[in-house]
Length: 64
Image (tube, rainbow, N blue to C red):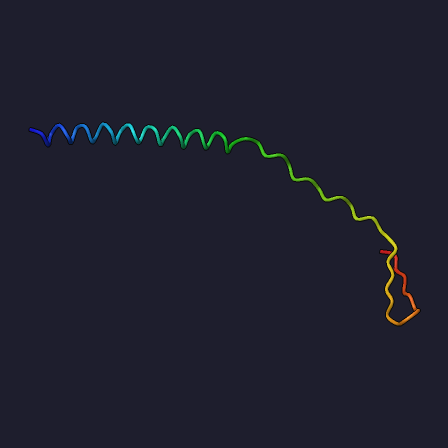
């Protein structure tokens, strides 16, 4: 019978596809397991002189 042959062929194709997907997922998982480099700490903010001019000719200096 023709339908029995097609069913078996469909099952074989399905099995091959499942194996291929499983292999690809395993490769992706292995690639994701690569150790990530630790987060770098931000450089410390160095204090600097700042000034603001609230009124014309009058400067307010601050050291932050």
